[in-house]
Image (cartoon, rainbow, N blue to C red; front, side):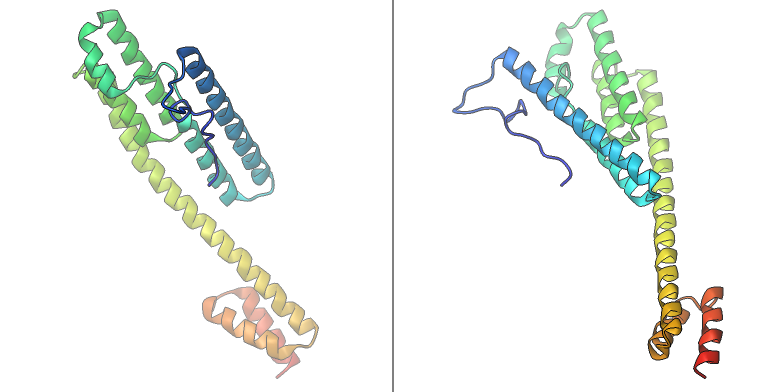
Length: 219
């Protein structure tokens, strides 16, 4: 688990002996919780930057994804539930509805910007509770769904590339061990390891060269 949610700082959990927090204390708890999330996000991004400098692409992707997930935990102090929105919409003025629609679109755009398209769609769909035929929300949903599919394809491609890179690194490391065995005249260990590698990488040029070198040293 890459994050911890403190019971004492989460407004929905900070209840004891059936006593509810006052509005001021609830707002303070929300701010404290959001601050802790912000610190976790900054830490993950800093770790990702260091991993990038070290050339560890796999860790970069993992850490950035964790930062994105942490972002979704941030509590919007002005966010309302769908149930409450439905019950209040009849009492809203036209300007109030426009303001709530703007909020949902802004939050959806923020989530889409993080690559969290499924969560963005959830925000955009709340607009329809206030205006069923809202064209901008419909367009954003369509774009988010297209980007989600495109993003998933890129993730799979990146993962495949990373797996291939790790496989090649391991192959090179094992070939280095073969060279060391040959240098130490430990030909039996060199042969066993090289035979295994040749079965996995029959066209590997370095493996073929080492095989010729091994046969010359220990016919």
